[in-house]
Length: 444
Image (cartoon, rainbow, N blue to C red):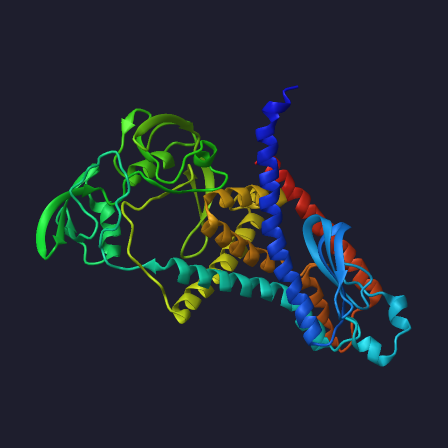
């Protein structure tokens, strides 16, 4: 056996595990800390705060008597409150029976209904708040595009050099006016399919015609996870110059050829840093969320169009960044719910459901894309996991909230035996979905 030859594979494996542990640990900590801190605020004592399950790797006890620990299996975490029989928050009937009124008040099961419900809901809510803060922070740090067609640094392309220069304000492309950056981007659909076009620009107070790139060349802006392009090791900035021997000059041509491929292999000639290489990709049937809601199934190779030059940016104010961040949180929630619905009714593939293996693959891919992409991914996943925990399935938080709603309506809690049975059935359902998602990641 060639042990030296296996080292790169082991390196990739440990890198994947490390990225996965970082992502999941951050999200789980935020979620469980929401339970813990709101429980503390409402007078419920936490016996254990655990990051991970299984054998304890490290632990310590704080001044309030809560044990903080890190366990060996990084697939979640839990807060065990006083009165809980275990991580699933079922009641420890024997322990509860011997408590006086004051001690019962400090337990999860002896606290008022409002305190219990707030503590349970806090986990998912903290996931949403965390994502909102991350989205808003990144927007303020990275900025948003200024809607002015002013040229920044021009992206390297095969047809360079162009006469277009950084600082030029674009007035028209091939005679089509471009008062705003949005006009410039929309003009791509009306431009001739050629790599060099005529630009009318304002430069130094003078109006002149110069040569410039097509507004939307076949330039890779981002490479999607689990896509044909990523498996072929395409990178942002790559330019596809030909498909099956046919030269192309626009992203529209690339999109149309891929859509009409029927999933048959395509031979791509790719330009990167002045050199060309040949790649073969098999477009995949992909379910895409639509802006107006719903999904559309198309053949894709997993590329988005790149920008031909850097756009000017500005730092949004706190209110503007917060508004955009709130819309992003809602977009993730809506897309996740729609995706689940369309999988249930059979309109999109169940391969869209991923297990921790899929999350681990996505984690390492996003980590390789840069810090900003990695942190944004953590925020998106935080929303998705917060939403998942609100599903009305015991032992998820949503299942406990259903029990609390029953208690509020019926003026009495559900029976201990009934709750134990429902939690067992819910756990079986969750494990079944886990196995199904794991099967997806191994076979889809």
